[in-house]
Amino acid sequence: MKSFGVGNGFGEALLAILQSRGRVFGPIRGADGICRLGPLTRWTSLCADPPYLPPKKYLFPPRERLWSLMADEYRRNGRPEEAMALVGLAPCDLRAIDYLDRVFADDPHYQERRRRTLLVGIACVPREECACRVGDYPPGDLFLADDRLWCGSMQGEDLVAQLRPVLGDEQDRPLPPREFVGRPQENGRLLAAFARSAGAPLWARIAQGCLSCGACSAVCPTCTCYDIVDEVLPGKAPERFRTWDNCFFSSFALVAGGHNFHRERAERLRFRFEHKFFGFGPLRGETSCVGCGRCARACPVGISLEEIRQTLLRESSR
Ligand code: SF4
Ligand code: SF4
Image 1 (cartoon, rainbow, N blue to C red):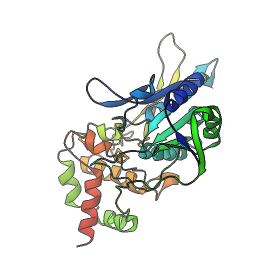
Image 2: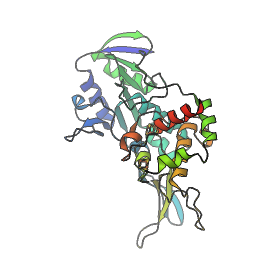
Image 3: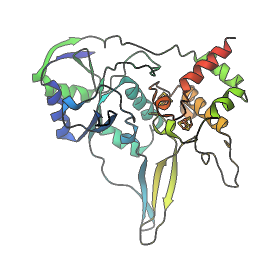
Image 4: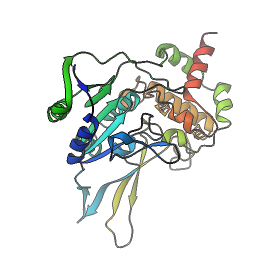
């Protein structure tokens, strides 16, 4: 893999190139000390911590118009997507975007936005709540580690060509081994333990404190449930919107006729666990949890899927 030394002036040069093609977002620390994704105007403002909210919102917005009804026919929202760059993404967030790419592989709205988005990753410093699932780096278009820049795509190579005057030596070498805080996946054992846990007191015990606030799903970089809402307002063309939904809401599995497939919080907790660790639909069998730890950090009552995972594994080995 092509890599280049980086020195003084590299960051501002990269930022200037990215800004010339569109909007640039990166993690920035606010006055309250919290790191959030926002418009990046100076390279030195880039914060090393992963942002509180993941980059998902830029590619899969919380609410977006899909169609308008014009002259008796539905028209796709024709607004062209602006080019953008997401900079300073930790490996878990890059991996989450890779997952979103597959979930929305056939979604024209997502794909159009994604085609116009460049990803610049950065090596992270693992924190206590991290539980990465995979030890290698997903490179994105460019990736920064150990004062070197790696190219992960053709777009990355185009950027490197423009940056060549501020880059150092070129070497063909793999990304450096990363400090990996993940634990063995043990998916087979976990699946067996999960299957045996249906109706087990574990779920009710943990869910007892759950407020059904949905914060854990909202901050998750790979939660993609959505609802489709048609708006028909007087004097306006009817419109169809896609809005984030949340499997922790009591209304999530409510269907016509009043039946609720997940009436109990314990059922909703187990459902979310299943989808995070064993996937669903065409991605069944794949873990969508990238181990970023945001759900545990955001939960007001301290519920952690990673802790549940470990409990299930522990109980299965007794
Ligand atoms: S389930 Fe939690 S740890 Fe896993 S990706 Fe989502 S927010 Fe991160
Ligand atoms: S953040 Fe915690 S309390 Fe809120 S829905 Fe998720 S598990 Fe329940």
